Length: 173
Image 1 (cartoon, rainbow, N blue to C red):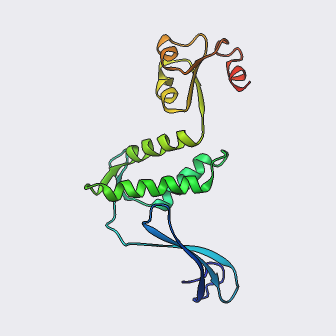
Image 2 (image 1 turned 180 degrees about the vertical axis):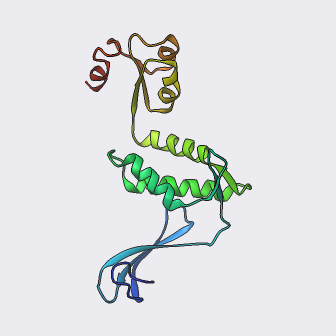
Image 3 (image 1 turned 90 degrees about the vertical axis):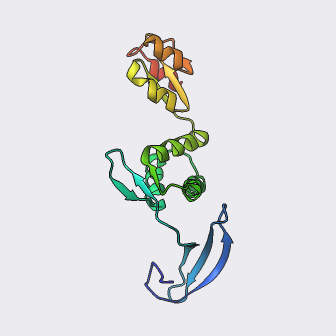
């Protein structure tokens, strides 16, 4: 294994354990030259799965890309990295169990959002019909007092303040 720090080709395994789902082996290694430690994962080579984008393009599924996107979405949130890695593993397991070799990006996104919702509560404040999808997607949907009746019907909380008159401040307090 090549050291990512000094490019030396020899390292020793310090610790080896199964991942949570048992589909990979996590190894902690130490470079024999620079003595720095790094982590590697050993997995079974698998048939590539394709992600179908909104515009119809197909792209090979990449767990690294998925984790990078989730990390970007959660960078200012108190969500442990191990939990995010667990979500990526779960998506990989779902793909492996599917008979189809293609999956829609929206389907992956919905699954990830459902999992993130259990880890971290996010609120969305809305007042118009175009806000309904976001209000339903987040952990806590909030409507301002003068919101459209359909928005009030799907919201978890209806504020006393109207839009533009301190409703967001009321939610924060």
